[in-house]
Length: 113
Image (cartoon, rainbow, N blue to C red; front, side):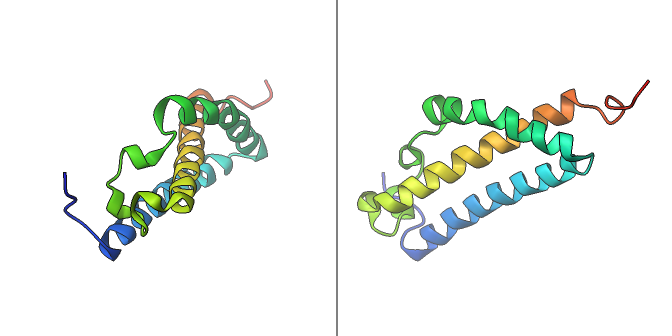
């Protein structure tokens, strides 16, 4: 199936998607880490076991999900595919961890009673 977006437009579109994913991860981590260093540490610890699960079952090789024209060398652009796969896996794990910590760890939970 031919891609609607080809050439540099596809490369830029792929970069914008990955940049948006990274920006969302940074926003959520900063939002929840404002509560204290314990929240940031909790996000880091929760994201570690999520990374292999996401890499194995969800993302893995992102070249399966995006058209070949997104990568500048087509399917042969292995370096870009590896970077996109790693970035999507790490950012998604951090986003999920931040959401989990945000739901479980309410602002009043760490007060001394």
